[in-house]
Image (cartoon, rainbow, N blue to C red; front, side):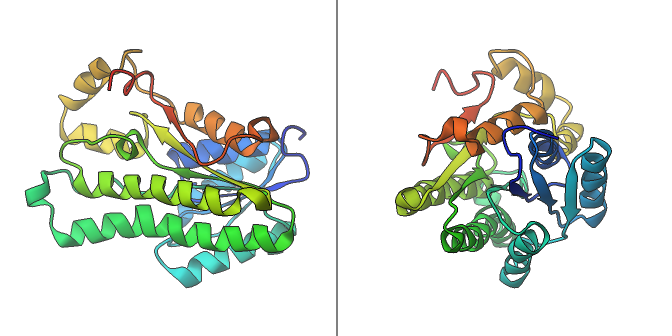
Length: 255
């Protein structure tokens, strides 16, 4: 395969489905060798198989992004498998428990922030070190959310974690701008993923209300976020760093 990332290697967390799987497939389509990672080993294996079926190269490495040793091993696995690490999409995340701030217990808050915020921090720490030491530079995209740029009722832990992701993104971008490493975030709006489908199943009124709130009157597809991630990691975005690219069908345009 040939494309934007011919000869390069990419790492994608949360790649067992949804946005992560779509991004892994998009990287491979553009010629990258991809290390796919997910805490769900079955989902990660399936993504690697899909990449191979499409003619690409992928290796699966299961990882819990809340565990520092596992994250270090993950990033080492990318360089061991491919000899380099050029791009990373830190995508692993959870919604947390739906409910108002006063009803959000500490366990939910801690778990949501551990995956969504600490997980991104641990991945950034390991990836930046590898890219810095290689001297080859690189590009990293973190998955934030429209909830990282504005508030959202009934998801206090999720919103706090995604605002934190935006802060980490901007800080790392400033720190490594002269080292040839760009760090950005993608901020999806309502996307039809397994995670969102599960929430909508619990509350049948949520889907039509959510669609009505999007000016384009539809939910987004994981592939639409993947295209944004791939662009941000490519040389076509060579002057873009420290940004949160909102991909939301106009959901936040009126705020």
